Image (cartoon, rainbow, N blue to C red; front, side, top):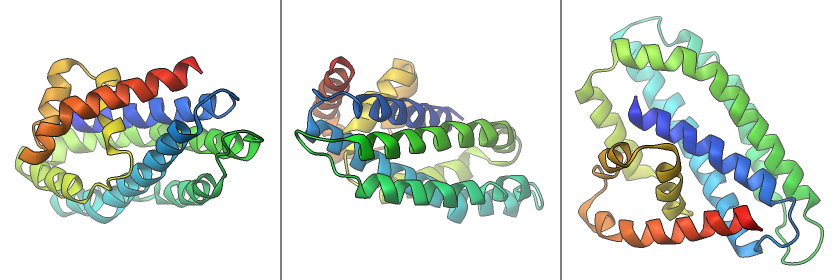
Length: 199
């Protein structure tokens, strides 16, 4: 529950920040690109993990209970199309960023609406049907397959949406080499997020 809540909170915060920062001419193009690439990779990976692994896991334990969640897959397809447009949008250092701003706003709106549909179904299903052991197996697979694009930003957004205890719990699942990088990731992500907010 904690991991899912913080992940969804990250998606809300990150999509909102990109949509807002993309409209600001003085926002750093490299930081915008880093946030955009992080969102595209992370959102794709997240919903593919749900469709391919989490919904079947819930269904295997409680047949029929994943049907309402599977019905949300159409929203995942709409998100894929929006992510394609966001990925293709140019991020010029100087010049017109309207295409980026429009694509980012579309992704933000889809993500926020989708989560408002998904969470009332998903949270009760996780609580009722997914054991800690099954969740750990799922979470380890998600961590192992998480794309590297902008991965350090994840730490900064987790810090924003979770308590220190919750963030420590989630990050404890990282492999040992990644654990050593957490302080540097935290510093980098905090700087990028703060810069884009101030732009």
